[in-house]
Image 1 (tube, rainbow, N blue to C red):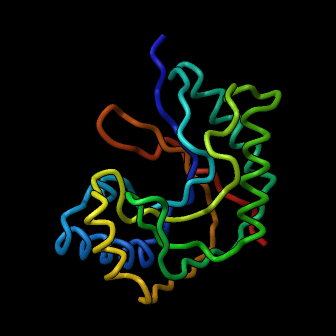
Image 2 (cartoon, rainbow, N blue to C red):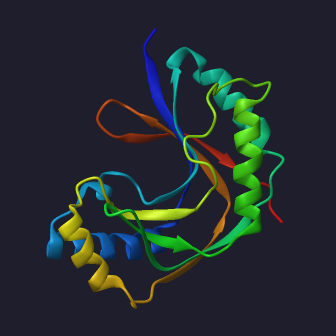
Length: 183
């Protein structure tokens, strides 16, 4: 049984997407890396995992029930950061709501629902929005970081839904959107 790759994310509203894409395009035009532009700008809440497509209806029903109990919240993207020598990102301002949602979702996905049987790949959670990765050499990384260090970035928006993303073999599609309760 072939397994499909999935993940759960916050997708950005159009105005924030435009700001993120402008920075990504600047990086691509100036330094070359453009792979991060293949995905919609997002903040991962549950890292990629594999499940057979046959399980998708059960997964979407369970996630709909899970997210129906959660309330919308505000997120702010602020300035830049990096991991290692191959990832540049926009930082997510500290958000207790996002951290709690992430922790509860991890427990849910690995608990009795049983969708994920492995522990999280990376302990801890550093919410971020990747703007350059995978096709970034250490030399490009250093140059990009010199260009972004000290620069400001700001976007703030309400998180009113979460998205289940599905890899179709070539790119990521939004498989399902889950509305959060209004405040």
